[in-house]
Image (cartoon, helix red, strand yellow):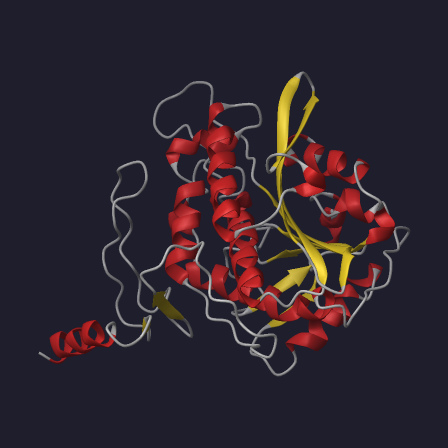
Length: 363
């Protein structure tokens, strides 16, 4: 009866307010809704998606954003939106998002649609969000949207992730699709979510270039091409998101950053997170050379302080480049918390208060 009364009051309040926020306080999850490919979603786990977040239901389309003032330093993550992005991009319908396939075309169209809802501009006066080029006899395209800055609009900060993956097995029985939920649908979810919230706050002094790179899995092709089209002197920082949907070995509400000692970018991030309950540590997997293995690398080679955030235990992850890298294996709270931490920790760079030192390559 109390539950019915609560929801009745929420309905009544809609006549007087624009939204009704429900604090998900870690109760038992409910059965998931049918996924994009018609499968039943997974059952929720106790407190998995709810801890420390609010689900917001405004009844408005996502392109009708409320503009927040620059004094509003809070951020509420809509975990239902995070989940929707994740389950869409990692669905079977995307067929593993291999470069040059119908699957990656579907992913590109989804990303373009979200950029349009948010109201991002195109890059370098392009007619569309696509940066088209041909490599290895394959038509490729990065998807790029721009949120123009104010007092420093000719200074740029890149927020990126790769939206391609490795496609499908050519033959065999059972599951043949490499869905790439963590690698790197999770990063693209971060790009889309951050674009939405930075647009809502509308206080970025520097311009933000949101890039979903293609062809990372076949040699960082998309980010290399992007790097050849820009003036590195105008680019202040690169914020790359790679595999951010699982809890790291450093524990809850933590992430790690590649190339930590190659600029003071990491120190700025740590400073901005002081007083929060989230921490970022240097990359614990130096023997894998991860700084040069993700899309931050082509920008870093131009001198741009470009680094990758990650949360995955890469040395023990059993789903990496396997058909088991499905949305159900990720923790939406970890993903949401990491996105929020990136937003908090990079705002001083995006707002022009901090400028990281140029990257050092010979360390």
